Length: 99
Image (cartoon, rainbow, N blue to C red; front, side):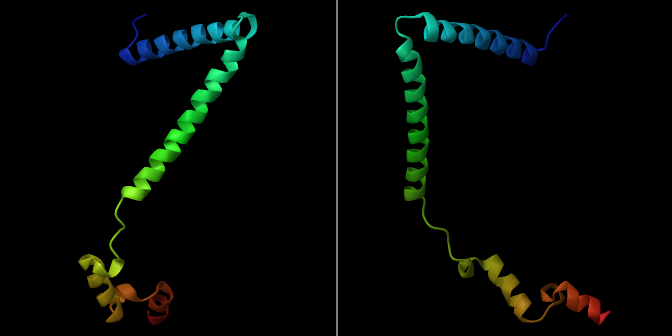
C-alpha cells in the first residue's frame, strides 16, 4: 500500500511517540535516575508556561493603545448617520410597527 506524504509523516510521529513512551517508562521505573524523569518534564512545563506568560506580558506592555472610536473616520460617518435618523439606525421593532 502506498502512503501519501501526510500519512508517512503521521506514521513517523506515531512510531517516534511509541518509542519515546517505552524509553520514558524505562527511565521512570528502572533507571538509577528515575527522579530526573519527573523533575525534567515538570521543569520544562513550568518554564514553558512562564515563558508564554512573559511573552504575553511583553506583548501587552509594548503594544500601543488602540485609537479611541471617535477618531476613526469610518465609525464617525456611521455614527452621524444614526443620529440623523436614517433607517439603519432604527431598531427592528420600530420598523415592524411602521409597516
